[in-house]
Length: 258
Ligand SMILES: Nc1ncnc2c1ncn2[C@@H]1O[C@H](COP(=O)(O)OP(=O)(O)O)[C@@H](O)[C@H]1O
Ligand SMILES: Cc1ncc(COP(=O)(O)O)c(N)n1
Figure (tube, rainbow, N blue to C red):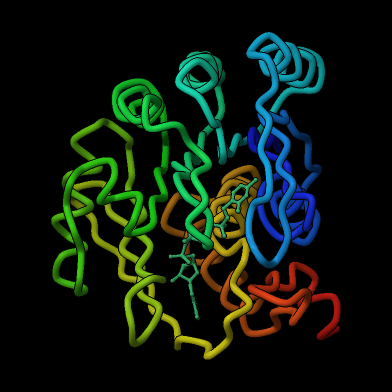
């Protein structure tokens, strides 16, 4: 399967998190790099986008020869890249998990403000599943969620842009880590205990990639999301205290348990 995302030099989020997740879930990982970040547990020290032609060329190389069973998108950076990727995934016969990455855990911008409209009107309509966190919901729809009740309103506002499913991540609330998956008719609440662990760098990337890996294996969206939630919860529980700030989750936790 294929990730279209930015590189995280610290190895906890972005392309690196995605490829590790795909391996851990038994799939073949491929990548289209959209941007390179200088990043560690303390924050993002620099970010450089690739030319949009380089993004298109990587995508075509992979899809035209090897083929894909599922696509995941992450950090896209600019409106130009968002629009190119939206067109590419809309023209690919595979489910697409769109993680509308806006800001890093440290508050560093990973998407230009001028790209928000393209995310709303071009990228979200091409998604099989859109996986915003609560900050991204607020940025994209104006809906501010402060409790589980608000997550339904958030999901409706995201679905209005056209993805088949919305997975609203409640990781930034307090209490249990609760996510809501809905297509506007079915509702699935995914709940796990909150791990008192600050090493949560890469949780969103990991969850979205795990959903895509399960879709690639032929699971339905609700089955894929349930399995992905279980995987990310284990990875958070086993998180690494690396660096002086927010460390990464442990993508290999299942291998270590075995
Ligand atoms: N401390 C935690 N303990 C358990 N699960 C968590 C914790 N923090 C986040 N999660 C879960 O991790 C996944 C990613 O959510 P979130 O951290 O909100 O996304 P993002 O990384 O995009 O900000 C969600 O399933 C969320 O419920
Ligand atoms: C290159 C890149 N992509 C995405 C994220 C978001 O990370 P998270 O999964 O913690 O929200 C990041 N920090 N860096």
